[in-house]
Length: 112
Image (cartoon, helix red, strand yellow):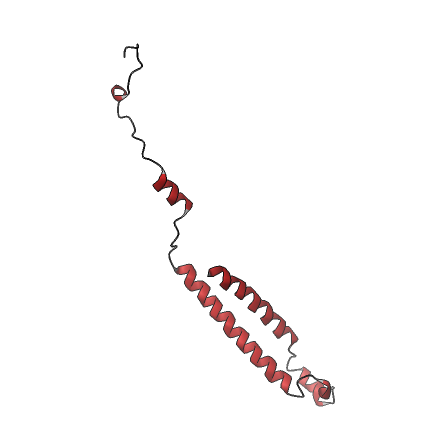
């Protein structure tokens, strides 16, 4: 689930960057008022601003939603144990000898 959100986050971020770069600033409206070719636009004289503004708002909302989703998933405890936990539980407990007398002797050899 987290990997799907990360992929969606990257796609939305790249689309948001592209949409913001396509938009023109407030200073570009002055050139359009003096006959700057507004009749040749794809969305009409004012249609591009509202269309791009709505797309920007939708992409920003998706970006924040995926960010919150990723934050929520990262705060949840992991349900899959880590490798070190698996090794600790799988390894058999080896008893440690307490004194040299508890170590079995070598056959044919006397202890000092």
